[in-house]
Structures are given as structure tokens and as C-alpha cells.
Image 1 (cartoon, rainbow, N blue to C red):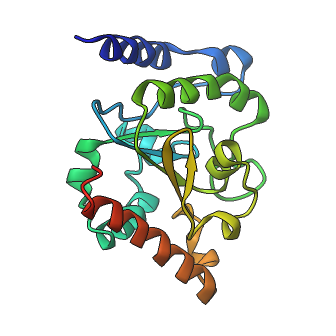
Image 2: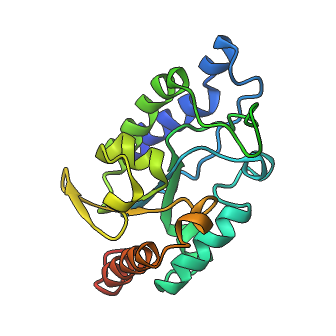
Length: 202
């Protein structure tokens, strides 16, 4: 085992055993969901696991995941290959629970973000991927300081020696994709992924 593997193993152990949000009373059943594939030249960062992900222990295994992997297949990346080769994680690692004010899951709180983000930053540091896919507005806001999907999707960004490609979150993409200009943005984003894979960057 080399030094990087040792660091990652230690980090994975800390994430899996973390109970900080439970101690604060916000996550009653902490079960971190992520896929620490190593070595990996690609990383995918979502918002937070959903209920299906909590049950399966697998990132993007619900309805949103089916949409995401349909997009990736358009870009030439099969789900089986993607899961086997890409480090998949999220801004916060545990299912935050249902939205008390309506349908769907709630977004992570500021306190939960503050407690969990150090893990994400350490994951990026250790894996040091060539390409990072950011899925959803929260990931864009946290990591690229971009507030609106329209400002990120359809563009690539270079930061800290890595290529960052924003994508809409598939769970809410149906409404966003009602607009033709947004469908074109997604198409451009997928074309960037295809270009990178064709160029041997995975």
C-alpha cells in the first residue's frame, strides 16, 4: 500500500464512522453513501444521497441515477464502466431526510455543510483527479461559486490543475430542460465529457 492509498483508507474510515450530525440532532441515522474508487482520474460530486441511495448504499442508484447514466451513455460512458472507474461522492455524505415543507428531500443545512465539507475537500486533495463532474446547483455553488445552472452548464472550468464540468441535477432537470437553450447547454456538457474520454483521459 502506497502513501496515497493509506491516506484514502484513513479518510474513508473517518467518513464512515462520522456521527457529528447525529450528535447535533440533525441526522438520526447516519449512513454515509459514496464510492471511493481508487485509483481514479475522474470524480463525480453530487449534492447528498437520497432515500434509495441510503437503502442500496450506492450513489445515484435511484430515479435520478437512471437519468444521469442515460446522459453519460450519450457521452460514451457506460454505467458499469463509470461505477468501476470513477470516484463518486457528494457535498454531504448522509441522507438528510424528507423536506418537512413539501415533497422531495431537504437540502443539507448550513451546519451539516460545515461539518461535512472538510471530508469533500480532503477527498479531492487525495484523489487529485483530472476531471470533476459537478452534479446540481449546490455542488456548483460550493466548489465553483456559481449560483445558477445557466452560468455553469455547457462550460468547462480549469481550477487547481483539474477540469470541472457542471451538470444539472437529474432529479430536477426535467423542468430546467423545458427550455431549449438549457437542453443545448446539457448537450455541450456531454460533448465535453465525450471529448475527454475519446482523448484517453479516463
